[in-house]
Image (cartoon, rainbow, N blue to C red):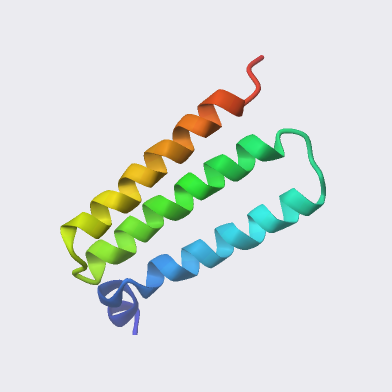
Length: 84
């Protein structure tokens, strides 16, 4: 069963769902720094999407697109994160 989850890329979808729930909770609690948190969460979701696509033998362009979008989300995170 675990092998099937990994080989199909479904394990990445499970991780994405967990991050999405966490992001939703933080967003609606109106916590400080939530924009940076959301950008960081989106970057994680996109990296996991790239992983899931790669595990499912998707075209390399799709994997590269997910990684490129993840980089963009990381840039937004760095621009919005509070520094001490």
